[in-house]
Length: 271
Image (tube, rainbow, N blue to C red):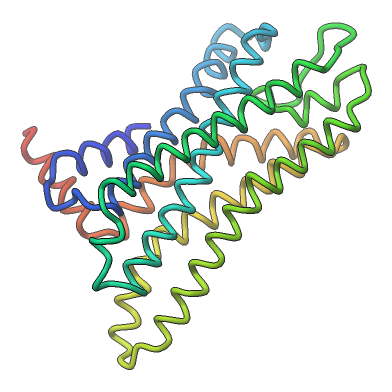
């Protein structure tokens, strides 16, 4: 969380970073902070009190905010891929295309779509019937795990869950793949190797975060849906919900000179 806060502080305090790329990075950092804040405080409280209980209302709130911030991460990564596409393939028109109005609109639409997805998952969980107190084999309330524990028939909701996964997950992934196909095609047309490296280096951090996010996300999504792999699902959930948001700021700060320079200025000004 501190790493994400440092990125927000660095971008907001440095006028040189007031660009669409870093505007979306700040929003991604905010989503990561929200994601971690939804899961970690309750997990730490359970560890301290040696209690693993959560109320039904608390579980619903956790499901809602978990999917809200996860979907925001998903959509912001897609928007950032589009931003890199415009910067590399249409550099002369970049400032005209990625104007403040469009950037704000993309963030607002991402937020509205994320609210829609989270509420759809809440509606599915509300339809479940549990015979007694149940033990969720995960560190937070995850609908696939709850479906496995319900007494009522969940076949319809399971199909709907995967359908929503394809829509809200598959469409952004397709957008990222399309953007990078266009980016790679444009980079390959650059004559000098130095120009190709410089162009691709601007996408390196984003591509690393995309691979980490979707790699751990798919692992958590499919392992939690399999009843025989509860332990593996719990480990995958930790990787997805804690490790990934923790590593994102380090990936961006270590590979981005502008971020490192802004962070050094922020830290030196506080001394």
